[in-house]
Image (cartoon, rainbow, N blue to C red):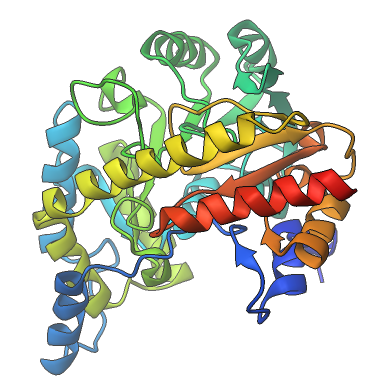
Length: 385
């Protein structure tokens, strides 16, 4: 087996979850998903497709109906995006991996802003790239980007810059001005940008277009920019494995070839569900965002009341990322919380070495009382350890 694969670190998030799965006394907040099921009308669309016998292959780039729906959806939030810039993928993870496969050769330099979901740093390494990390910096429980440090790290030798904003796990979000500065710099260096914007609708600041700032708002159609999206978060469809990419038209045909050699296509019945989700998005996403804001605003003050916790309400995402003073090993702490307090959290060092001592709490809970109970358990545990 390739050494790059052997060298991959196992998921520390999964390691914690494995320690608590199956225990009825554990409140699980470790994975990045809501505990609310997909809306019935989306599930019905998939079942109707199966009942019609739609069990065959589709176009590599996706059903025309879904590509058109995604183009309309994207154009309603950002400057117009044509269907010829859209590719449907088998989940957001698949979208990101396809983009990295399309852009990165072995030995290429890739810069990634961290802490970040570990898949984003693992994917370039799988392909044999050289990874350079630029870390966000914590300030009083909130993480910020030193834009100049990032620009200094991206040189003409940098093939790809990977940025996830709103960010998992920190909730940090780029400003429009920061995006413009990064884009202009990457134009000069010839660097591609892979923007993971799957959390763009989970944004809690005032916004005219109902989402976080996007590179699509400042880029030209032929800029070296690929944007990855997913149905998972905003449409409550994590298990469906459905996503999409936005890219320059010069790339789309070649992306279709890559999809052929990876998955061939996304299942038709899942794409039918995606069409309905897109067509009726206003019945789902605004409600999801409003509820997640209520979840954030319930949990964060409870954590802030604990003297050993440093945390700020993040402008985006679905996580409270907090520092627990006096507990340096995040993985060991997360395992202790499972065993001793009945709380399942993700360890900060799963996302980057610089996040050691931090924990991620996914607050996407249908029942706010689960968050309150989790905070109570944490408080009780801190009193006795």
